[in-house]
Length: 280
Ligand SMILES: [Zn+2]
Ligand SMILES: [Zn+2]
Figure (cartoon, rainbow, N blue to C red):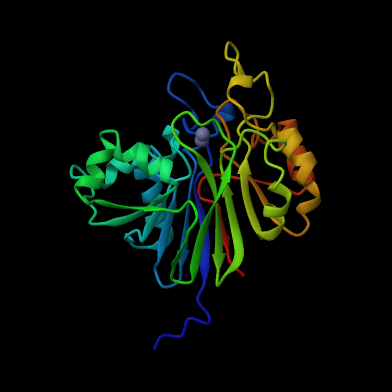
């Protein structure tokens, strides 16, 4: 019998950008900062790999995973947060024309599964049994001592509901992945949920209402980074608070930008593609 008592776990940020990545089509990025669309993977020392969000950049992100693991690992499960394109479009790479997976477990809120199973090209992934749909509304999924549960959050419900994912090791909450939320006032549970987890990846899409000239940011609701870091700075001494899902228009992460300096001074980590966090 194998000894799991010393098993190690790690989290790799495969993508730190908003759905369109950075740069987006038709734009330039801030100071050359490149980000692929939001996605993370959790791996165990036994080779289990769970993917959170299947982004449009999934091929380059898998290449990063291969470089990290030193092999080409099969995926043991994919978890989708919601039905905005940056979070599920990569699923096409599991179909007949590409990886042609056989019953890969696809965990998502039931509204996401309904949306995917009701629309091509996603529906074929299920009828062809490349993906096995598993609703995670009120359930948890446990693979190799990694337990995942969904937490519903308010976020523009264009097609589906939205969840964040709580990832626990041996039932001890470790990571909370929350790429998208409308705002903190709309979700008063944030403080309690963040406090329960060692590592929190949270929505840092925009830093200013003026970032997208010609577009109404108020119609694309997200908390602003200055508010987020002011609200949760008291958590940074004991928690790894990672700002992610960063829009191409956001100067967060640019070395000499004021918002970068402020976030670092308050103890936050700014996500970048390839950042690895190991479980203690
Ligand atoms: Zn998003
Ligand atoms: Zn979204």
